Image 1 (cartoon, rainbow, N blue to C red):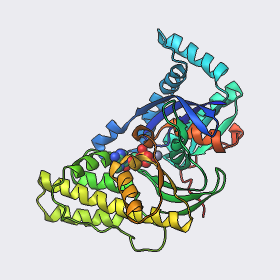
Image 2 (image 1 turned 30 degrees about the vertical axis):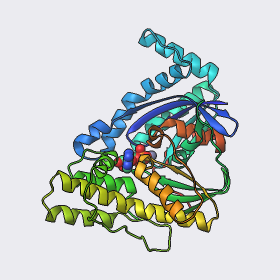
Image 3 (image 1 turned 45 degrees about the vertical axis):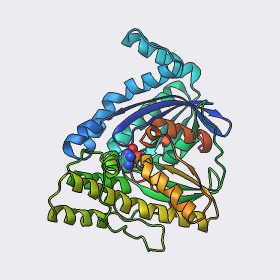
Image 4 (image 1 turned 135 degrees about the vertical axis):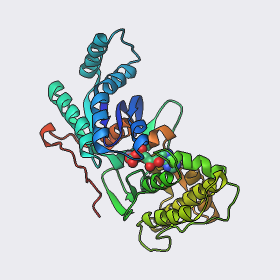
Amino acid sequence: MRLLSIETSCDETSAAVVEKKGQYISLLSNSTSSSARIHAQTGGIIPEEAARAQINAIIPVINEALLNSERVRAKSPEEEYKIAQEILSQKIQGIAVTSGPGLIGSLLVGIETAKTLAFVTKKPLYQVNHLLGHLYANFLVDDTNTKNIEFPFIGLIVSGGHTDLLFFESHAKYKWLGGTRDDAAGEALDKIGRMLNIQYPAGSEIEKKAEQNTNSTLHFQSPLLHDKSYDFSFSGLKTEVMRYVKNNNLDENLINSVCDATQNAVIKVIIKKTLKAMMEYNTSRVLIGGGVAANAKLRNSLKEEAKNNNIPLMLFAPSPSLCADNAAMIGARALLAEQPVPWQKVTPQPELYFST
Ligand code: KG4
Ligand code: ZN
């Protein structure tokens, strides 16, 4: 089965064409337009601006994904619409869309577009939880990679809006173990980046600056490190860094040290709780997803820490471009785990969280 999937939960407008290939998902095309540059000017996302950008991008992005899935090019905008329409009606068997969580204005653009396409083409419509989508980016394959993801596994979602640990027994049966009580890991990095005059979104730049650090003495606390739950909290770290930044004259070297210490504090607690979950639920498999999962230090330190503690680990992580918001991951979750829903029943769920 081949799906057109759509993701518009925040500041990325993305459309993809994906196809089921055994227990994995083949990625035929994935087109994404981001309004992050607009938000860089204000240091964070203004929901109204994000929604307006979604409106401008949604149709061109869908057309591009459809044409790329068949490797065809149009000679004019008129031809582009015609070819896109033909591919949609002849090659696509269903439509998937992110229903939440996310910004309501942004979600609405993708959802109303998907509902309209499903209604007009009479194709089944699938709604997907964005957060599960992040983990399902791991099921996307191309001709060059093979995988052996088996149940059970631990799912670690680390994004700009969420930090969650889950235990999966099957596609349908999963349990939420814990999550952040305040800021998400990426959100904390972005806010700390702002204190350091690093452009939004700051995560990858913080990672680069941390690599340049030559002074390893600076240390920030990892909140809830010794707490027995699987919960996280990053707002205290933000306050600790803010105090440090106010009381010190930051030159380039010190900024690199602050980045390194911040990144270490975030990573340390994520790793500790992920390894604890693996042991408690007796599994060596971990799937990570979300923008922060692109962080190489996080991936490498998780492997290193598992090795130092003699814990067998099979870590699955998407390629960096598929860690960020994209529609391919939404199609992957839809094809592997979701059932179609009547288009009349699909509405935005901005506060869609996991139940315990
Ligand atoms: O998953 P995502 O694209 O959007 C949400 O669903 O939130 O995640 C965006 C987040 C931002 O906070 C960004 O700073 C962070 O991912 N991020 C990183 C890296 N690349 C992006 N954080 C740490 N290291 C990175 N290399
Ligand atoms: Zn996301």
